[in-house]
Image 1 (tube, helix red, strand yellow):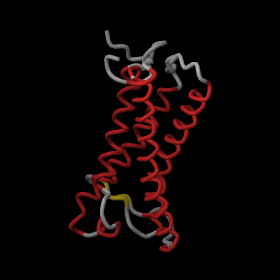
Image 2: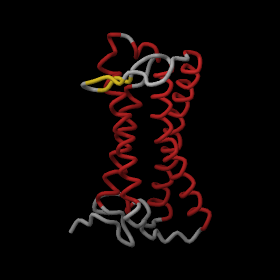
Image 3: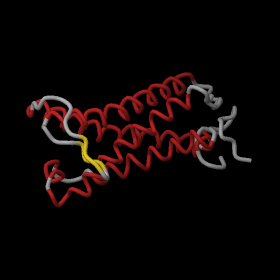
Length: 180
């Protein structure tokens, strides 16, 4: 039987779904962001830009839903005997959540400061703040740096999960995979 909520040894299907959907959205968004930032604002790249920005909005929605779900769902006991691992995992999770919120936020603010609308599939959201081109460019550079950082930190997160699975042979990795 599939458990919607987490048990003492495994994350529930809702948390697992949020986790893997977030990973897919981030990877897809990153893949669509490659190339010269200003080429994304050309007419030829309009479709790619719309998909990229829509994925960013979906990331925010999924993260907010996951945080709300976390208020009613427990975290499994992963039987980590090493306190430093538990504390490191908490810190990395906090950093990932901060990045998952700050990356779309910097994109929105930076784009609007440059006087460019957020372009989603089906509609645009015009700038809601006064244009400040230089500040917008700076914030977009921060957005790009944060986008690179999340890949490194998520990569370290994935490597740690594999370390738990193959070296420590504990249940940490299995707790986040379907049927684990």
